[in-house]
Length: 57
Image (cartoon, rainbow, N blue to C red; front, top):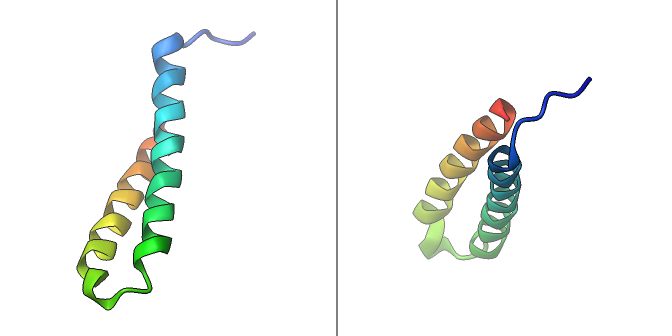
């Protein structure tokens, strides 16, 4: 028997997955540019936090 978690749960889960993909794309786009090295590092940190939240859901 599946426990119903509510629409809000699934909306948050979908948003996290979308955010995860977006952050990975941003890293790929910015990685070739040395002047964005710090920004890429910050995005990687954000991606780690998003992955942690995904595991909670």
